[in-house]
Image 1: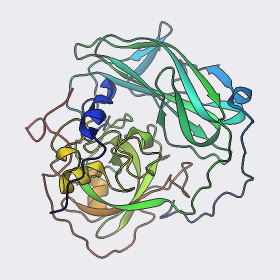
Image 2 (image 1 turned 180 degrees about the horizontal axis):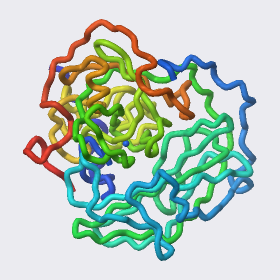
Image 3 (image 1 turned 90 degrees about the vertical axis):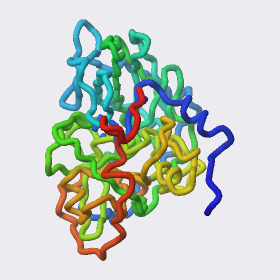
Image 4 (image 1 turned 135 degrees about the vertical axis):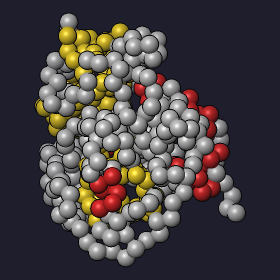
Length: 389
């Protein structure tokens, strides 16, 4: 039997205490999320070297909280503040009594490219409620970076230089229904200097254990209502959650029979901060694990983090991705099993757009589809895993 990984000293305690109330409950969270592989060559644009000193590149602006567009999930703007329309609405996968709302706000074009953003937030947040602000950047080629959480008063480092910056605000009410209200959001961006890292020629791929999402009729993290033949996936990090109705962050899933390109519309299974597709230097948690290895798989197979997820639950299967029912059966799975996942926005990929499903199907040899730990990595009311609030 291999020696269990336990992460850095005190890893279990440290990771759990770093969690924020906004994300304290879910396995497959956050149901509240080309053609085959991209073969386009890397951009030939001249590299930016950044301005000498962050002070010279600093730019500040107040975000228009009233410009909600079509990307809002259960959010309203009234009386000069951003709040919730329905305090009883919560993502289906969470199984808890806390209201949820999210708004992807209008992007802001900058005079000079930046790679760091600071948040100044004016909000009324009752005890037990929370507000989470994420930011992302779009480069000169029109490619969006992943989302990065920006705590008030701290600077979030973007993965690459950006000409446009966008904010996403997520609200969680208390269990009693008291909602937070956001009155003002100001962003300040700058350039830390230095040359941007070159992008690899191809997106990152990994072999990952997949489970079926189900939850038909429920709502996903980006506000999509799940249907019986739905085509999307959930990944265990909000960093790659596509805005409602978009395919900006998509994966190619190759199963025993064929491949499908599907958008990331939910968060889970098991963890909510496990962007396992990123290199260690960028990974939000569990950075001592190899790239492409989900924390849940390491916990299940090797006892990593005492065999538990970020919420302290005992991991019952090795799932690193959840598939909506249509995607699950389309790629050839009849039970939980291994798939090859290509994260199309990473490295040489982009986030501009991807074609609908069915355009990149290929025949593949059957792989191991033996099940374990039930149909899904998500907790259910019927006693599969405890709810954490």
